[in-house]
Amino acid sequence: QEELVESGGGSVQAGGSLRLSCAASGFTISNHCMAWFRQGPGKEREGVAAINKNGPIYAESVQGRFTISQDNAKNTFDLQMNSLKDEDSAVYYCARNRGLRGTWCPLMPEFWGYWGQGTQVTVSS
Image (tube, rainbow, N blue to C red):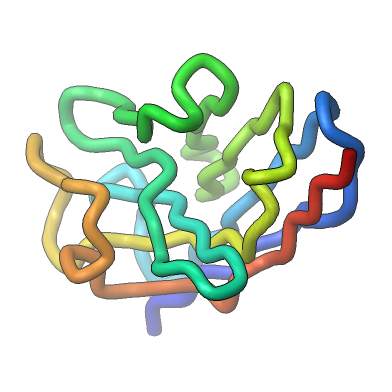
């Protein structure tokens, strides 16, 4: 059974850094598109970053500050967040697409079929 479990959330001051990790089980992450989404209070879920067959893609709001990576040996998918801002506060979710890793894996929630339970990130100034 496919499962995604996020960890690494917490509270940090603006300008600080956090690293989130998504542990996958029941499948091999390198065979699928993987993504990070977030949802702030009263907001819709938005895509943060994803990896497809061509490499990583980032939302404009996090470009240059966030970096995604995968560890094939551990079967984990990480999100390194630097220069955090108040507006980055949200519950962060790891996601996997329904099919295999292709070249088109958009940052639209409806595209993704598997989700973790989320981890809270709170940034305070």
